[in-house]
Image 1 (cartoon, rainbow, N blue to C red):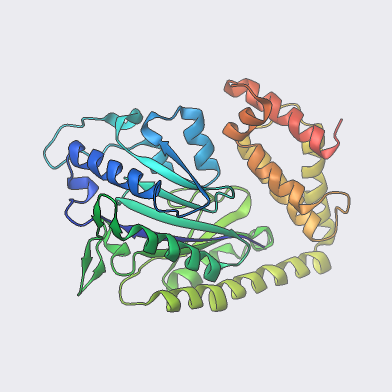
Image 2 (image 1 turned 90 degrees about the vertical axis):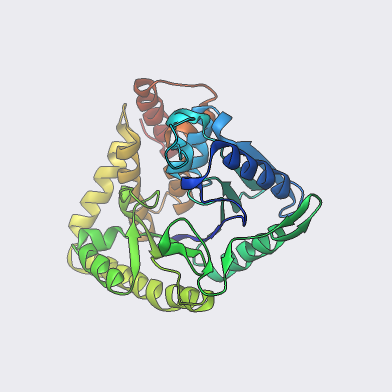
Length: 351
């Protein structure tokens, strides 16, 4: 039920204004410092650096689909200095980049997103502790002495790490888990989960985080504030208390569906499977919703001839950029709908 765990640290460089108040020259300087630091500190076996503002749209979308960058970072929303004209535009000129740890891509650092640096580590399953340790290692490696001077974070003895958004001030940490909760949705219990998590100071967001919808009943649950609460407490609360409760609610809903509404569940699962095996046109939204139903059926033991890993891979590979990379050519929207249906039929053994 837990797809992945993510820990993200927001950091800003001392001596530079926040991006919303910085000039283009200052933002370019931050990018240059971060690029040199990230590619020389040995934060991973290998580091891939991408100038996001120069990357083709397909590459930016690919990184977004892999959760290496955010929607805002992919779009390149311009952040002009106070009183200045928009000098870069939202189409791609705003200086921004990302460093990706290879070979597993588990860690990435966005430069010039909302803050100067956004360090993030993603681990499969419920592994927030391991993700935090890895993010902390990257954080420690970046701060301090380097060959071209000292890299110092903006920090206050009173408030902690200083960030552009007040909700990140303090530890600067955001921890989140990606959950698949189709049974809770089918049982009409998701509103209760949202209210309960909100009362505990947590946020429930969609597949791509803030501002996105819950495609295929995939949800991100994360902390909302970082001031006044130490990192271990935030991690412990989410990993050992809240997420296990949500998991148990989902398990109880799945048991109830199998015991009390099995025929309805089977109908939903096999209708979706039949559509995927027979469709000639599929949008990405349709694909993820149908695959979500099939994933529930696989994990509930209703579909023994398909592996959960196969479904997980299809959720990613049917996204627009990944589909085009798999096929080795760029496609317009209509061509993608046809190619996506063909690809899914081939993988799932359709007609």
